[in-house]
Length: 387
Image (cartoon, rainbow, N blue to C red):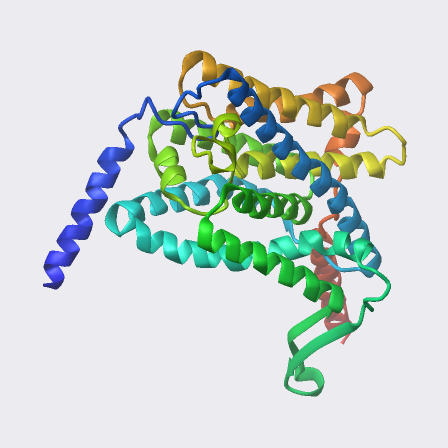
């Protein structure tokens, strides 16, 4: 019995590999257009809305990342930043995860997998949306509702062995945010409505741009370059990306109906944009905004120029897709636009060295530790000789 199950799994994986290498000319990865809507206005509204929804998380996430960066510097807390090694391995890890999901969808029931993923992303979405709503609720909450602080603190051990297990601070306003987010989450669970999906998707995107920190330009260039080839391979070389995107029922993409004008909110012919095509360029653009702030000048030339380049790259993706009627990996256009623009601006302004020298959080150089160790060993040797 066990051997039969193993044989079935092996055969399913083989079938998945064989299917993966077959190009699917009709499928689309990043922005899809399976059915041609009845009116060109529907296309314009759908893709125009997707472009706007893509720009908003980058703008607001970048601004919030500057505030978070400053707050951590004041508190002395170390930010979790992506290293060069992390950036190099990220496309490989993403490829393994992508093909793993593809194989799971081939081997196991799609409904069961999506049930688990829906529950997982429900909790993540509620937390992300509550975090996003927090400043809005704080500003809109009437004075009649007091902001009472709470602090949950669980520790393990005593004295020097004392460890924090849970150390979480929140207020009554945060509870209101959590209730609102949970209501939207229940709506998503029950209806899987595209508006609820987009609310979770936007929350993920804003939080991703805000909290995922690239430490310097070199790390950003390594990450973007790796994902440039990753996106091209999985879209043009196989049908894996498209199959997973269509099978994966989770708010990891923004969608907008192309038949909204004719069918209203019950429309079903969706165009879509993956969150990766927002967050990955977004964290690089957020780094450029932090660099602009570090120069102490009023203009935000690197941020605005690269944001404009992102917009043009996204428009180019949509244009080429409609001209050739074929899937287009968005990073094929977004990476050269977002990576080339700040380098060109820095070259024109004579700031290439300044740009590449910038670091959010300067890394500790191990050389100092080595020199200390060597000096201490030399002192020991000298003391032994003296004896």
